[in-house]
Amino acid sequence: MKKTCYTVFFPKPLDYAPVLALQLHVCDLKKRGFAPDLLLLLEHLPVITLGRNGDWHHLVVSDEILQSKGVSRYHVDRGGDITFHGPGQLVGYPLLQLERHEQDVHRYMRNLEEAIIRTLKDHEIEAQREAKLTGVWTSGGKICALGVHISRWITRHGFALNVNTDLSYYNLIVPCGLAGRSVTSMHAVLKREVGIQEVAAGLTEHFGRLFEREMEPISVAGMLDLLGGPSDANLRGLSALVKY
Image (cartoon, rainbow, N blue to C red; front, side, top):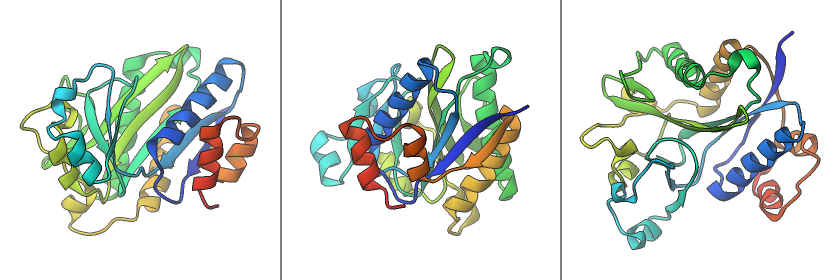
């Protein structure tokens, strides 16, 4: 029998901090025996994050310029280097308890990439991996970045797929620390706006097949109830930010 994975689509872009707090809260619950897996799908307000292996030298503008553009920044414990999140980008945070037969970091990463590749194919976009690099690429550049954290085989952080992302924000950084490499989006490839909720729905189906999960949609309110209600200021802030 497949495990249930609740999938939550947030209806408006969110600040980074409360969503990070939510991830940490869920993972702490899972370490104490909380069973259900979650897949959070959302857009962020403009933010630059740096992974544990990253270098702030890959931020190429001052904090004053970031502030003038309304971009926040965080140093977090995911893998990878520097990246951007913002409106028009579908960010996915799988919060899974990997079973014994799933406990392979390489396999986990490749399955995340495969879910993105299949989703892009649904939209007639050819995408692939690149040798020795993490993420998903098209002929026009990198379209999806990945960076994860796994502790006790519980996953957090995840992937960021450029759907209708304003790519000018990437001029603020050396994306993923790869100088001279371009980034792209579904909008840039298809020359049209793409429905982010439609992309999220298709990706959820592929995710469920690849990770052998029964994907069950749940509202934000339902998710908060499932977690026993907000237990700290950041989670209360999340509940106030989202209209459901």
